[in-house]
Amino acid sequence: MSKPHIPKPTESELEILQVLWQHGPTTVRFVNDELSRKRDIGYTTTLKLLQLMLDKGLVLRDDDSRTHVYRAAVREEETQGLLLDRLMNSAFGGSALKLVMQALGNKRTSQEELQQIRTLLNNMEEQKGANEKPDSNELA
Image (cartoon, rainbow, N blue to C red; front, side):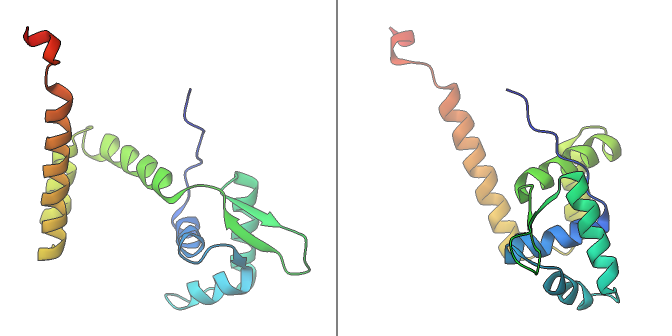
């Protein structure tokens, strides 16, 4: 079974998706108000972006009431994975190591984040070790 095609969102579309992922289904006015906290953006611009995103399949719209309610049509994790894969392949030659080294080297990583990374790596190693253990039948 192949993965469904997820259109690549623009930066502005990602900003809108972030609002929808964080707050759930909501109106154009709410999305515009949230975006306006970070930068100057007009209501009609937000509306137009949402209409374009609807055409691309990035959002869905509920037309039942007078006020249209938009919701994300793509999952946050899938979209992040898609964008990360593209970035890793195009900018880092497919190397996860280069990507991680660059990410940790350019940003001041907190102790809490480092501990979460260590825990993730330990869990991945344990999982891999469990998958590589031979069956008891193979030992006989």
